[in-house]
Length: 219
Image: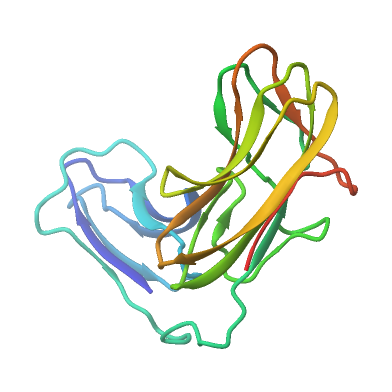
């Protein structure tokens, strides 16, 4: 449950709850006369979700007496030791890696084409997975792509630092590269897959709905 009291100079403004950057529900309305509004909403939240309260309009200064409270009403107190924590995401739109770039592969689908996410810890907008519980994870990826020039590689990153290179290739046509790494991770670690292109031409990672799609799995 999200509860809040907002006191501000400019009244007549809605304040809404946002989950992962998307508006979910209006929480309160500041009265035009007093500039004060209170309210609460009950939200269904998954581990790793980001929640905030935002005004839907122009506000003045917010008084120091304003407050917001987040209260957990139900749900498991922790992820059980034998609970499956896994995700499989697929790239369904081609992504170009420019010459000299090292880019995160944004696997944009974890709900169809075999994709799933047991604890909503993979962000299909950024290609990053935020590990929800400490443990040993197997990270696997397959990148299928077309290269216009040689000298490219696939690397697993943890917390924005290169963790494991899965190989380097000199192909200049359709190719496939991938692999797996077993890694001890802690809750909050951020994992992503990056393709680096040394120079001269680009790499286009295949984004399709069939067996030629590039994929990533963490479990």
